[in-house]
Image 1 (cartoon, helix red, strand yellow):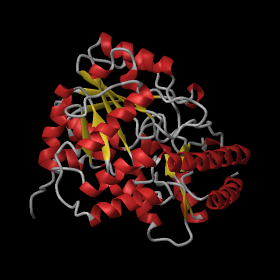
Image 2 (tube, one colour):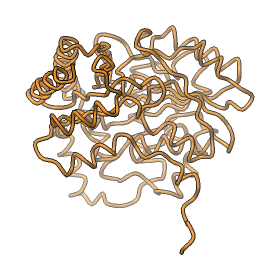
Image 3 (spheres, helix red, strand yellow):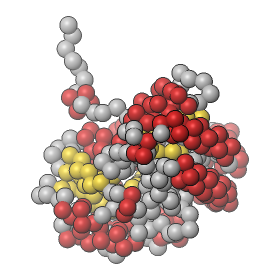
Length: 387
């Protein structure tokens, strides 16, 4: 029998709780999907045209590993305009193949085997997995619906050990839709300074907020020097398939990310970078219109889930609702499995998002309004049968 050639860290890695369900969905008909975190919109036409024109102009070659300078300049200008934090586009910004690659680069560049990363949960499924792939140790600090799924500074500080290297935060949050308050982020910044920690801040949903302000962590006093900011274009501009994101960090840190990036992917696709540049320059109106439509869907799904009897926190960002389903007597895995099999609605079990997610499911409202209405009708009938 051949030896097991897979590395132990890969064998031990838990499969994505999101992909598990959508492998099943792919084999079924008439399923309404409230699971994948992807805009249902097509990339706005002016951005598409910019990408097409780039192809016509022969922009099909490698770029600088860090990305085209015009895009890096536009990213730094945008961050300064929105958050009053200034990066040098030459050596403090890297254009990545989506935020997923930026996340991998950040952790690989700074975490040594055995070092710990504090992660407030529920959180995006990749955070713990990426830490494990570096040989690091993810330390989960669960939030609660009663606390608005805010990161809790006291619990973060209590979880620190001599092996702690970094704190990883993701707000606006996937899966809860929570937006971290300035007060809590300031408290986390104090912890980072006092214990000499790095903060990795995933801000991919920064433009999808409803009636509140998003705080860029690096803009807090003294935090730019110890923060890696991750951002991108997938959610704001409906550009998931273009695969373009960025990391912004002090030059001494960013050079580590670039070193890995140049050996793994060389550069983000040239055409995607030029489309992203167009998104910054001409896409704001389209992004705002999509956000208004998400807001309308948000109000529908939260109101109806609460009417159905599934207590739901009011999300202030991203495009997810996170209803509590324990009133049905089912755990989140069984609830999601049965809802899919019996009612053909796909959601994601909350436990896929780490400690604090048990007893909840994630419902994406990045789907057409009418489909959300139909899905909610099916969910209501399912919940009544469970009762």
